Amino acid sequence: METPRKSVYFVSLGCPKNRVDSEVMVGVARSSGYEIVAEADEAETIVINTCGFIGEAKKESIDTILELSELKKHGSLERLVVTGCLSQRYPTELASQMPEVDHFLGSSDMLKLGDVLRGGAERMLVGHPADWVVSAKDPRVLTGNRVHAYVKIAEGCNRVCSFCTIPEFRGKQRSRPADDIVREAEQLAAQGVVELNLISQDTIAYGRDLAKSERGSLASLVERVAEVEGIRWVRLFYLYPETIDDALIELLANHPRVVPYVDMPLQHASDAMLKRMKRGHGIDRQRKVVERMRKEIPGLTFRTAFIVGHPGETDDEFQELCDFVSWARFEHVGVFRYSDEESCKSFGFDDKVSAKVASARYRKLMALQRRIARAANRTRIGQELDILVEGPSEEHEFVMAGRHAGQAPEIDGQVYLSGAEVLPGQIRRVRISQASDYDLVGDVIDEAAFEAMPQPKKKKRVALKMLEQAPAPLASPTTEWR
Image 1 (tube, rainbow, N blue to C red):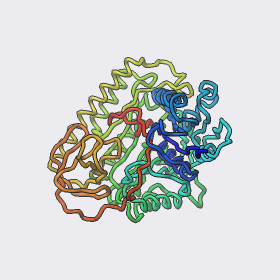
Image 2 (image 1 turned 180 degrees about the vertical axis):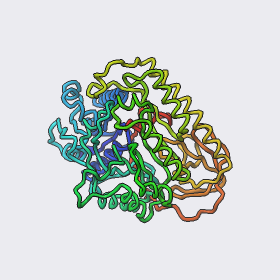
Image 3 (image 1 turned 45 degrees about the vertical axis):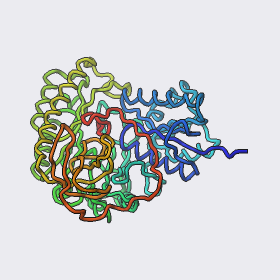
Image 4 (image 1 turned 180 degrees about the horizontal axis):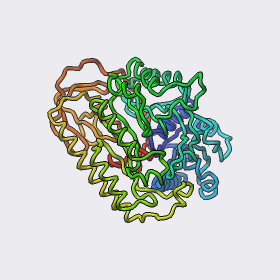
């Protein structure tokens, strides 16, 4: 008798936080003796880590489930597992309407995949959304290029924004102890990672939920991570627009390994809209935060996100948003059309904005930001920048690509390199010669100052299919509404 195949194929939908969860499940599968395959039709088991945040994400998740379930009829697929935010949010509905799915796990059930793979597990394994937060001891396997990695420093959120469902299916804020985060950073550095991107639902609130004996500031955590041997860049995502403390400003301004890059979703720029969104502040605070960071952090790159079409948004309020974007001249902006989710507070608001109007506002704000981004990129021509080499470009054959400190992985464009041989993990000095709306072209002008960080040799790259909801740089799901 032939030994049954033990192969699994992964699909990860949505944001980098989901990607971390998927990488933990890849680790669980490997530790359970499964081979990770690159093609869905080669797999005995398929695991789909879903996004259930907004309407478009839910549709993509459902379409992916239905598409891959067809392999039960025409391929080798024996077991289909659905995990993540969609199944956490709609467990009963999915179970009754999708008989083709063999097991459902929620947003905090990543480690339960081991029970599923061993056999005999119940079909419904969706637990409480606050049951788990990733730990350095979890069997995580990186699925990217190993030059950069995401580190989830907390899970859940305590905010009450009117448009957001995250607390519903991710639970309340749970910060990881700093020692555990630093331990994971050390593990990633040992694998050759040189850039760490710190993420959570509400990064500025890190540590507030911890016991006094474990509590520490975000600044102290960032500094500890930046001091891990082998790490060259540390980047912060998902900062809420509160007053940033002096210690964090100091790190962003002066620490050689904390890049002067801030991701802070602001959502709107009208006092009336910010009040309807229940953001807890007005435009005056936002202006002061932007002004202070521009003044005190040399070379700051500011990424933000806005929602258009929220219930009650008037033409005048939308114009206030456009005026604010023109004033602030953010380097990177994500624009999202409001999604009317039934469990959001805003679902019951009057004065809904039509889809046609929301789409028109989306296009107008995107066009405005595109002009700002193009102008900013053109000022780079002739500048010399340090570029982190990532590897061969996925867009242009035989071209190596990297990023400068103002470009976050996967969402902010790239720098295409020429003039010298470069290796992934190196940081090289490059003179910029060309600029488009989002990408740059440059010539390497230095000798290699240090060797690339060691990368695994002759080891097959793990295949984790990352499906993004909107690949355009201005509307990337990596910058969420948070």
